[in-house]
Length: 129
Length: 304
Image (cartoon, rainbow over all chains, first blue to last red; front, side, top):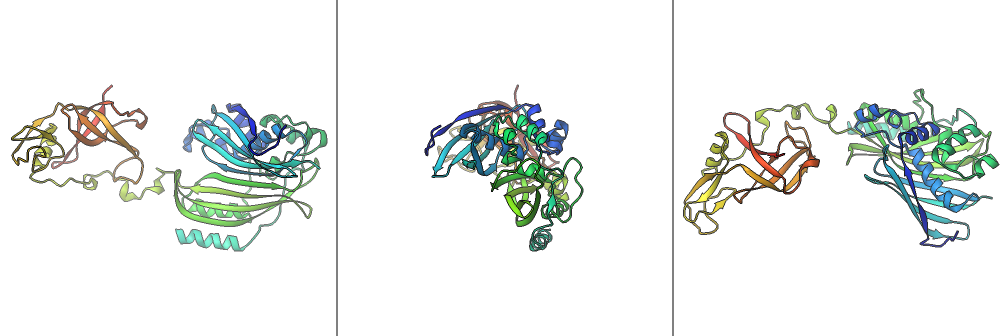
């Protein structure tokens, strides 16, 4: 793995199935109905169930550690949320190294869905002690 | 309402951090495994070393399926105030987490939160709402292990009853914006009332013009007559009107500039159209909306 400013991470495409939305919501202990009950989600004005924020944060973290390897330590994850990521969307994560220091680097991550940018964020990553 | 929200925000903010809320369970491998599996994270480090993925920090202190009301929690308290004020929907907008170290299997964490900022009411793409920012810190004993700044938008879903004052909900002829009928335009409105779409024509050179006016742009003559249009045309341009509210109307509505078969252009609503179906070049036919005895508006319908 080469770490230098401008290095582009391999793209990650996640088919966001209803199972994915629901199992990640439950695994993050988020039981809000909009993450597992389509009828309720539609009643509340959404077109379908959608990913919860703890999952989005988790996916952004995973995307960077998939690249950085098992000895990476994540220091910080900052995300800004945009378009909802609905069931049946494909979430496409891309990333690029924006800063490098002696202790680690910062990766800018974008997660896109059909409706636009679902998430934009930065992940600061170093090495586990 | 705004004052009530601001006063509550100030009171909750001034109260500072709420009491520490312990996680329901210690950090544990079964939950870590569920999370890794669901997220699709194959990093072996977590299970091997008994470490929790850092993005799980907040998971440990989630409240579960049937959370008890917690008036001491600043975000819950602020949410209740905004809920009362009609801002019933919520969406997270920003989350920034800092991890001082990874949590280990068996550790017990607790979280303390404080309200940092409440700003609004703001018009957003989702509706009118307030941004609520909180800071949370997770502790193991006295040691701070992670912190988070979290911002949510609490908004009033558009179209909800509270969002529309009663005065704007009734469709009545008296609500309609009425055109000013002049000597130049009366033939047009007499036409719509009679179910005719009339186009002004120069009484000398025969040029068609719309909107009607006193003088021909081409030859300068002030004599005029009209012809009855066939009532067909194409969408030349259009807008989807979503805001501001229109008295008596349910938004969105589509308003098109239609190029008539005869060549002049005319503005009107495209009735019953799904905004996604309207296209430049789409064929339309005129329709007439009778408002009352004095006023009939021309409008358009998409042809199949």
